[in-house]
Length: 135
Image (cartoon, rainbow, N blue to C red):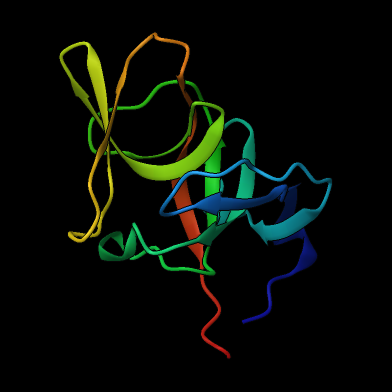
């Protein structure tokens, strides 16, 4: 499917996000043109997924997630978060004064952090996915 250029929008594509063990986001200046219908309101960015912690949510290694930048999330949303300065993608759940970052892979364990501790920060929520089926 080829979309007319007017139906595409360039968004920042700074690098990769961990779907597994957190790691530092690579800051780059690359951009990716994506269909406007995948974008939400506000500022968006694209990140390539590395790892398999979100496979049961349909997010696989090598996929590109479209992220709406925001600092808050609702329970059950898939977030891009910084934990001790390292980026990860997980499902968000507030449990009392703590936050659970839950993988969508039964072989992996959740990460728990204290909300407001300075070691945890939401950077955005996942609003879209791009997957290339070609090898």
